[in-house]
Length: 194
Image (cartoon, rainbow, N blue to C red; front, side, top):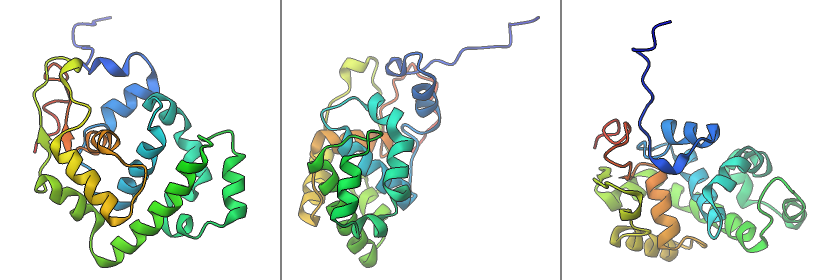
């Protein structure tokens, strides 16, 4: 068998050898995302990730989708005490009451914003509609937040969102391709062009 044509992709080292993490790196992380439903999903998942590893959230993602009605914002915005109690009892997700209540609040804010204009356009306006492409050599060079992330976090807070500080917002920006933080040695650095 000829193996000369088989090449192993060069990836950012943080995804390791976890198949789910590799698929996330290859198919989602850093890819410019404009789908409002998915942007909302990432916003919620990133808020749950605060203080935890993204790997933990990624492995619970399907449970989150099931628990939060596929991240249908209008449904989440209408959650009552009984639903909150069922979420607090759901071992498949992160059972943090503050984060669950923030998710309901954030769904309500998101629904209001969507009625006024495009949520995706509003988010992307913070980077002038164009992914910010960085040229990091090593993972250690990547910042935990940037001035743009600080501004977006502040604007989200002004709009009424909760549990979304600059570090969480920067992780959201990386995940949704608003910023391309794939290392220059990674095959995906050049895949996602501005």
